[in-house]
Structure formats: C-alpha cells, structure tokens
Image (cartoon, rainbow, N blue to C red):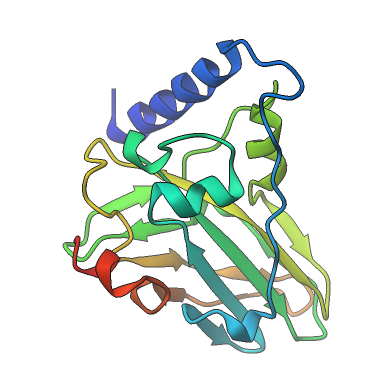
Length: 194
C-alpha cells in the first residue's frame, strides 16, 4: 500500500473511531472558526489578485479551538485553515487534491480527506476545504488535514503549503503556483520544534 493510501486509511480509521465513541448530542461541541480579513494572516501570498492565507493549527491546544477532539495533533493529524480571497473580476476554480504540504527536507504530504458521514465527523466535513468555485470579489475558507506517523514533531515548522494552481475559469488559464511559508504564522516555540 503506498504512503498516500496509508495516510488516507489512517485518517479514516481515526474518524471512524470518533464515530464509534458513545456520544450524546451534548458530548461533542461543534465550534465556530472566525475568519479574519485575509491581510491579517501572516502566512499568505498573492498572485494576480488572488490571495491565499494559511493559519496552521500546529498544536493540540489550537486544534481544540476548532475541533472538539482531544490531542488531535498528538495523534498525528495537523489541520490547516486555508483562506482564499478572489479580488479579481473572474470566476476561479480550486482543486484541493493538488494541495501539498512540503517539509523543509522536501518531503510531500498530501491532504487527508475527512469521511462524509456521522457526528462529530460532520464537524470535520463541514469545515473541510473541498473542490469549489470562487466567485469574483469573494472570500472562501476551509480546513485541509495532513497526517504524520511522527506526531511529536511539528509538521508545519519550516514547511510550506503548495497549491500548484488555481484555475481562472473566465480567462481559461492557471494562476500560481501559490507557495505559502508557514513559519510566519507559528509561535517561536513551535518553530524550534522542527
């Protein structure tokens, strides 16, 4: 089994384990994640009037602010909140399967999709960044998830989020690449963990 399939299977098993937990309606709390103006995020890049910002959830404490799951990062799952602002007058299309996290050593981590049913799984899927159209003058956002079998290291320290392209549907051309260094968004203590 290749590494990408293994990561997908591992995340699916984790989410199914969540689903199997005895949860009453009051046990799991769906949390709202505030979206700030894209210019306020320190990890961002702009290409031709399209800005991609990334807010990495690099530790269990921060991940707990978005997902009511203990020790998410300690189990190897690292969420990243991606915010995309389309300041152009054109319609855009994003394909999330192409998003990659590139480590300082060049190792690539592909996104791990969440499973499409159940609660608290619904909280993960409702916040997941999926293939979508981005209308002119709008902001879209969602989470992508990365898995590492080495949860003690900070997967985001020294890494960059790589989106090879975002399709400009109006002009029929690809914009990008969008390479967002994550270190500007990490506390100094997290950067030292790499």
